[in-house]
Amino acid sequence: MLVLEYKVKGRRQQYQAIDEAIRTTQFIRNKAIRYWIDAPREAKINRIALNNYSTALRKEFKFVEELNSMACQAATERAWSAIDRFYGNCKSKKPGKKGFPRFQKDNRSVEYKTSGWSIHPTKKRVTFTDKKGIGELKLLGKWDIYTYPVKSIKRVRLVGKADGYYCQFAVDIEVKTEQRTGDGELGLDVGLEFFYSDSNGHHEENPRFLKKAEKAIKHAQRQIYKKEKGKNQRRKARQRYARKHLKVNRQRNEHSKRLGRCVCKANALVAYEDLNVRGMVKNHCLAKSINDVGWGLFRHWLEYFAGKFNTTVVAVNPRFTSQKCSDCGAIVKKSLSTRTHKCSCGCDLQRDVNAAINILNRGIARDGQSRSNATGVGTSTLLGATLAEQVLT
Ligand SMILES: [Zn+2]
Image (cartoon, rainbow, N blue to C red):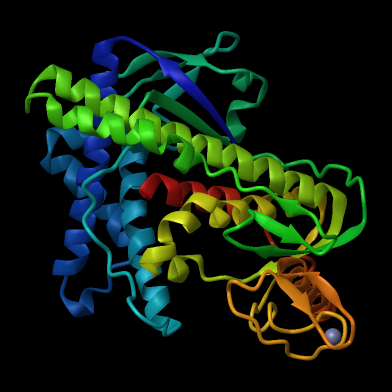
């Protein structure tokens, strides 16, 4: 699945119509969750039952009926994926919270499937044809969506962001694998000092986008409270603040994407620590820096490009990787502030490089096993799946 994103241009009433469609989507999703909660135990609510419920909602509410029927189904499917995830967590006995479906308050997108829209055959324009009145929108972006067969466009999503509205097309085509430029093997160690250190001794600097923008963001935040509540000026100040955050997120994403691509392009095997990022982020003191490092995002792009370049990526258990000597295997105790690894066997390395070599060795050992039952890491579904996630969060 390939996702093409455009910024859209329209008139103010059209933007209001998009907002209205987004609100309707949230309404349907939340109604479906409520329906599932209230249903008697023996009713066994599944995906199909929720789909049928969307039809019932269309009869009951005029504003639901105005939204394209498949878009309504897509909204109940969101509810279903939240329910299904909860069931999955319960079944697999996931430790901690099971993620009971919650009512959504901040939905930002509406999703159409294969009907309710049409694309202009040559110009970059998309028209939404249901009764929400969104109408024809101009697409701003460098892609040529009309060169793809209309049949291959499986989903069309309108998303509201801090700096405007975007239209995403999910196109069902094979993503071509690209030629790799090297067959190296690389271990990556994540830290706070560097973005990562690799087993070849390279340290990738931390960009710290948030820290750099922090002053401007704090300033923008203060401006909000200086303006009177309910006034236009305050709304504008809030938009400026949101745009600053959006910019940091984009910078982070681009940075992770670029690095992930480089690493996968040059290597046949990449091993990294299987850190529970969420668990780590919960540690309040470290949270801001770790979020800023954006390791989760980097990992996402690593896995994505692994599929593209046919690179094997392996997540290994990080236990003792910083304490163990990568040369002789002896445990050399060190505190967080010790920056070098010095072993009695004569091995003398920077601390993170030693860890990265250990991670690589573990990755090579693991890879031998995993290749027998699976070819590399499955990433074909990754993009589609995570996009749905992004929209929800
Ligand atoms: Zn040693």
